[in-house]
Amino acid sequence: MNRIYGKADRVLAWLGLTFTPESQAFIPRAIELLPLLIREFARSRQPNSGMKLTPNFKVDRQLGYLGREGWEAIIHLIRNSYFRRVWMVQEIALAKEITFLCGDYEIESHLMEKAVFDSWHITRWTLIDLTNGMPMRVTVEYHDDSTVFFVRDMINYDGHEGNGHKTIRIANLLDEQACSAPQDRVLGILGMVEEEFGNASEDLHTHSSIADLYTRFSTMLFEASGLTDVHWWYYMSMAFRKNRIEGLPSWVPDLHHNRTEDKRHVFDSMMFMRGSSDPPWKASSKPRKAAHGPRPGEIVLRGKLVDHVMHVYPEVPYSFPDRTDPPGTTGMKWLSAVTAVIQWERSLSVAVLQPGTLSPTDHRPAHPPLSADVYWRALLADLTADLNTGTQLTHDTWREFQEQGQRFLAVVPKLKSLKSETGIDPWDLPSWTDSEEERETMRCFRDSKHPVAVFMVKLSFTLDHQMVGTREGRFGFTCTGARLGDVVCVFNNSVSPFVIRKVDEMDDRTRWRFVGDAYVDGLMYGEADALAVEEENVLLM
Image (tube, rainbow, N blue to C red; front, side):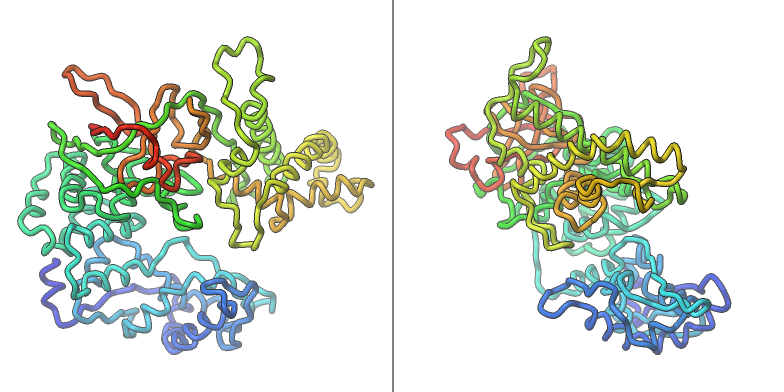
C-alpha cells in the first residue's frame, strides 16, 4: 500500500459518519466554522505565554452557542479515531495530496492540520448547552492527533538525515498510535522509510516471532544510529515499561504494549521528564562507543559503573479516585489516598534522614548522611517549577507538607466519624469544625493550587518507581523492581543514569540486564565524566 499511496496524485481519507443523524446534519456547518475555530485557538492562548491557555476562555458566540450536536460534529472532524491508527499515518504521510471526507463533504487538508494541531484547547473553553442554557465542557480522549501531520512533514523533508534518525523519530512518535496486529507496529513504519534501509528492511518481513521482529528492528536502528543523539535514548527508554512480551532483550522496547496500563506513570521514563529540567539533563557528554555483542540481541555500550544500590524503599501508594468512580464514593477514597501518601513520605524521610531511629532488628547498613535538600529534590526529580499553577516548590514547601500532613492525620479519625454519622463527606458540612487550623489543613490538601497540594501531586513522579539509596550516599529512584546489589551505570553520551543487574552466564563474559533508567542526585549533569572510575564495555542482553 505504501507504493500506491506514494504514486497517487490524491488520497481520499474517510472520516466516517457521526454517531447520530442530528450531529451529521451539522457537518457542513462544522466545516464552515473550521477557520473561525483555528483563529479562536490562537486567541485562547495567554499573551506572551507560548502555549499557556486562558482558563475558562469565552469563545466566539458562533462556537459557544453551537450546542451539543454542533460540537459532536466538530469533535468528529478534529478528534477522529482515524488519526490514532498506525496504518492511517502511512496513508497521510506518503500522499502527494490528501482530502478528508465526512459523508459527502470534503475538507481541505491544510484546514484539518491546523484544527487538529490545537484541538486539545477546546477542553478549556466555556460553551453553552442550548437545552438548558447552562455552561458545558467538551471532553476528548487524551492523544496527540497531530502526530500524523508531524510524520508527513518528516517524510517530505528534502534533507537526508541518515543514521536511521528518521525511522527512530517516527517510531517514537507512533508510540501512542493504535493497531491490532503487533507486527504492524514495525511494518507500518518500514513502508515509510524504505530509503533509509533499502533491502535490509525487507528481511524483517520474514520474522519468526514478534520478539524476533522487534529485536531485529531495534538492532537495525542500533546499527544505523550507534546512539548518535537523543532520539535513540528516547527509543530505548520504551523498553522499561511494566508489561512486555517474553523473549525480548532488556534493551529492546515492546512496541505493541503501549496502553496506559502498560506504562509507568506519571512519566514513562526519565526521557519524558528531561525537557522540564533546566538545564536539560545530560548524564554524560563523552563520545559514544557501541558495538554488537557476541550473540543475536546483545549490544555493548561503553560507560562507567559508578555505584551500587544499597537501599530500596517502598513505592509511593498513589491511588487517588478515578473519574469513573460513582458520585458519593470518592470523598473517603481521596481521604485514604492522602493519608497513605503522607504516611509514606513520613516513613521514607525517617529512614533516609534519620537512619539512627531504625529498629535494632534491621540489620541493613544505615543510609549514609543525606541532606534534606537532596532528599526532597530527589522526590520531585528536581523539577521544582509547576507550570500549571506557576508554583515554585522549595524546602519550605516540603516542610509545610510534612507539618500540615501531621495535622491532617490527626483530623482523619474525626472526619471518618462524621462520615459514618451523616453519610456526607464531612468537609461539605458547613460546620464540620470550629477550628480555623483544621479548616486550613484541609484547604492545603483540597485546593489544587495550594503549594502543599501541588507538592503532593508532584510525588506521583515516583509512581511505578522506587526510591533507592546507594553505597556512595547518593539518592534517587528507578523502575520498581530494583534490588540490593544492582549497579548504577552512566553510559557514554547518555541522558540519565541507568540501573543494571548482573546475569549469571555459563561463558567467561559478564552480562547485564537493564532494570530501568534512573534519576540519581549528583549524576544528572555530567558529574560521572569527571569521576576517577574506569570506563568499561558493558555487555547487555
